[in-house]
Image (cartoon, rainbow, N blue to C red; front, side, top):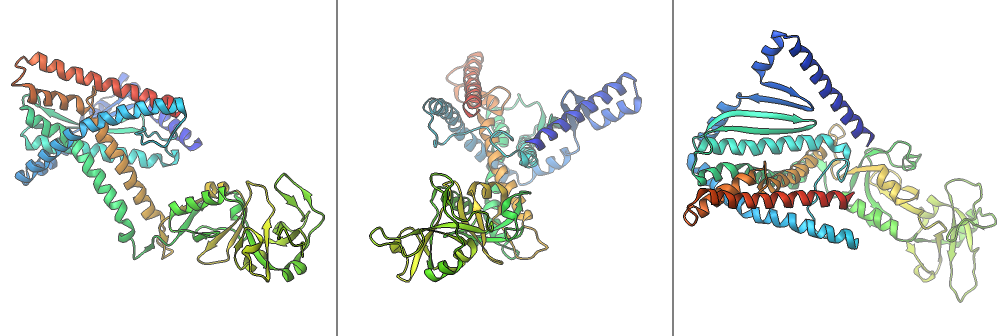
Length: 488
C-alpha cells in the first residue's frame, strides 16, 4: 500500500506542477507556449490532461474502407450480440445488488457476484501498471470499433481525444453528423465499441490459455512452480531454505503442478495436523538428546531445551494396550528424521513392525513442512504455511534456460488476464442504458427502430428511452453504493 500511496502522491504533484506552469505561461502570454498548445491539441486542466489529434484519421479511413461486405457482416453481428447482452448486463447488476445486500445481512458468501475492481481495494496495488495499461488498451479497442464502423457508414471522422483523468487514461472518438443516420446505422456504430471489447477479451483469453504451448521450447509448464522472489528477512530463505529460481515439485505429500496446486497444498497443510514419521528404535536410542519435558502450551511440549534450533521434540505414538518400549518424548534432528522416515503415520499401526511412529510435538499453528525441490536438498520449514504463502512468490513458467527469465511469460499472462477481465467488464458497463455511456444512445436507437411504426410521436419514443435510461442509471448507482458498503 505504501507504493500505491507514493505513486498517487507523485501523480498529484505532477498534475499540480503542470497546472501551475500552464497558468503561469498563459498569464504571461508566452506566444511559443500558446502556439505549442494549439498545434499539439493539448489542454491542461485540474487533475486532467486532454489531447486531441487527427493524426490517426487517415489510417482509420483505410481500415474502414477495406472489405466492405466483410465489415458489414462484422458490425452487424456486433450489433446483435451487443443488444443481446444488454438485458444480461442489467440482470447481472440487479442480481449482484440484491445478493450483496442479502449476504451482508446474513453474512453469507460464495455466490457469483460482479464486483467493481479497484486497485488497493480488491486488487493488488502492486499491479497498478497492468491496470492502467489494460484500461488504455480496452479504451483504444473500444474507440477504434466506433471509428471504423463510422467510416463504414460514411460518417466524417473528426478525430480522437485522449484524456488522462488523474491516472486513468480514456480515449474518445469524435464524429460529425451522427444524429442524421438511420437508427440501424446508428446501432452499428454505437455497438461497435462493445463488440470490439468482447472480441478483445476473447482474444486475450485465448492467448493466455495457449501461452504454455507457445513458450514450451523455452519454459516448462505443469511440472511444478518456480520461485520468483522471496520476501526479505523471511525465515524460509535462511540457510538451507528456498532461493530464487528453485523449482518446487511437492509440499509434504501434496504434489505441485502449478500456482493453483501450490496454494491448495499450503492451505491443506495449514488445516491438517502434523503427521508422524516411521523410524527405527535404534535411531532414537542413538540420537535422542532430550531433557526433562515441559509443557509450552496445551498442545506443544518442549523436550529439547536450548539445543540446536534444528532439533524438534517428537512424541512417541505407541499402542494403548502395550507398554511404551521407548521414551514418550525424544529430542531429534528434524532433517535426519525426515530423511530416514519410510513413510507417514498418524497412529501406532501405520508403521511396519520394526519401526515406530513419532509425531512432532508442536503448537497447532506451527507445522513441519517439507518442500521438495527438483535440484537440491528438501527444505525443512518449521512455522506457519501462511508465512510461506506471503513470503514466496511463484510462477507457473519454469525457465529451462537461465538467460530467459520467467517474468516474460508471466507478465504476458497477467496482462492477458487483466485485458480479459477489464475489456469484458468495459463492454458490460457500456452496454447498460446509463447516462454518458453507450447504452444511453443504443437504447434510444433501439426504441426508435422498434417503436417508430407503433408510436408515431417522436417525443413519446424519446420519453420511453429516457425512462429506461433513468432506470439503468439508478440501478448502476445503487449497485455501486451497495458494493462500496458491503465490501468495505
